[in-house]
Image 1 (cartoon, helix red, strand yellow):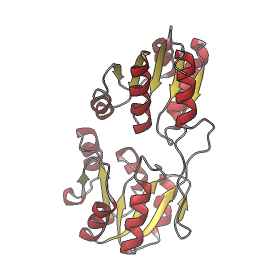
Image 2 (cartoon, rainbow, N blue to C red):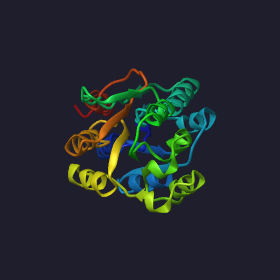
Image 3 (cartoon, rainbow, N blue to C red):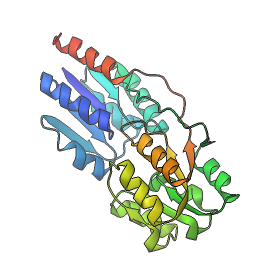
Image 4 (cartoon, rainbow, N blue to C red):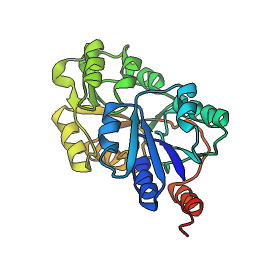
Length: 247
């Protein structure tokens, strides 16, 4: 059995470890060098890195028995391309859903990063952005001195901060996962009044961020997840076991 997993998430890495252990030929596609570094720690898998369009994805899916979309819940374009590629390659495709978090009742909800920026323009105080370097441009209308982006320690992320003219002392380049204690320390260290996050679920450390905001009295701005359909990790793992005859 040959399974192709479009990943870059904790669940994708966990699933690839399981399918490789079952004896499946496991190919994992990730978009970034960071994703490649993390995935290559999983033995028995082959990693392809770099952003692909639907046509390139379809080429990878040739001869595959199963395609699994385990990309981030907010990677809408990637998921669209994966579905189109699987259809073109005539390969069954399953979407792995990350469980949503229980949102605090007093949090502010935004439709996207641009909407979050509009909400924050009428507020005061420092802002911790935990939405990733790709979303930085959406906050261009917010005063730079208020912004404290937490990004991956990669050249691409630092370049995005420089392009936005974020003060260098405001850039927090760190690799997660982050505990509640570390989040709380950062909020206090930089006198953060607002924390902006996506609902990354348990794997994305959402609960730890929400609790840190509660402890420090910071306002929490949550970017809503885009609606999607799919199946939980356990269901897709069972499907892989059935296809491998491991039950």
